[in-house]
Amino acid sequence: MKEKQKTIEIIGLSIGYSSKKNTKVVAERINSTIFSGELTCLLGANGIGKSTLLRTLTAFQPKLSGRIVIRNKEIEDYSEKELAKLIGVVLTEKFDIKNMTVRELIGLGRSPYTGFWGNLNKEDETIVENAISLVKIENLAERMIHTLSDGERQKAMIAKALAQETPIILLDEPTAFLDFPSKVEIMQLLHRLSRKTNKTIFLSTHDLELALQIADKIWLMDKENGIRTGTPEDLSLDGSLSNFFARKGIIFDQDTGLFRVENDYDRQIKVSGHGQKFTMIRKALLRNGVLASRHAESDISIEIKESNITLLQSGQQLFTVNTIEELLEKINSSR
Image 1 (tube, rainbow, N blue to C red):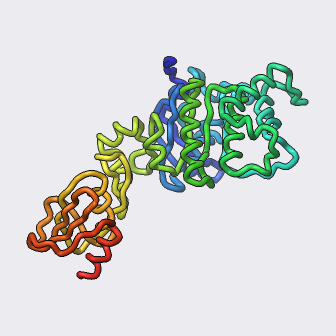
Image 2: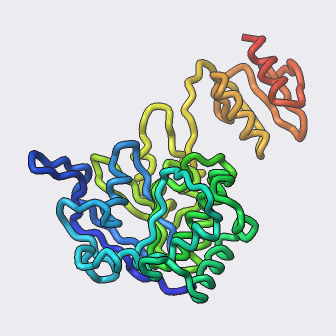
């Protein structure tokens, strides 16, 4: 693995909007670092300032105060052309392009190098082909943009950013509008690209579960604590994720590193057994207002043995079923 380099350093950064009449601060006192060869995901509620931060990091929007140092140089010391060779950007907005193939779209990524007319030479064409190969969309290269699915279009935009040959790629909600398999595919693609190309890949997302499973680093952004950063595992162990998502109905399970929904219950049942069926029975019962555990104090109990599920009362067998659906029907009818 290539050695990771510090590519973006943020020091005492305040972001927001400024006019002659007033200044609106969206977030302040941000301090963090982004490294090459890593996929970093920015998490936060709607309206917290994720898109504002991304626009500020790309110089689309001026910072209010503080410093943004990119490759040991202040962001304002770069010209617009220099930044175009430094940072590739993939935005959320859908675009309506007709009469353009995927290959031609990706070729637009070479515009910082081709000048006014945008003519590609052989070297540019080779770079475009390499980008297509990296994203593995050879089968889409001759397709027209308007015929692509949302997931295919997002892959084309990522390939365009790769053709730009920037060491940094910033993405704003790249999995928005995608179905779940496409979300997983795009996140895995970005993680693989960060490793294979040693680029800095930084994105905002609402896909919490995917980010926690795939990202190398997480940035948690909220109004009270600013931005907390670390690996998903460290943020889990130190309680940051539990505190961040401590709201009614949402629980971060530190044992699994995933989220679960809190369900109210009005009765308890003792369950003995182990394995996946034990876990699934507990999950199904809790959804139906029953807390199932090995330590519950109740006359009713459930024994799980291989494919059989047996319900007992005071040690006496009531019935045996094979599926969780049958178990739920029996329990609900006995209430």
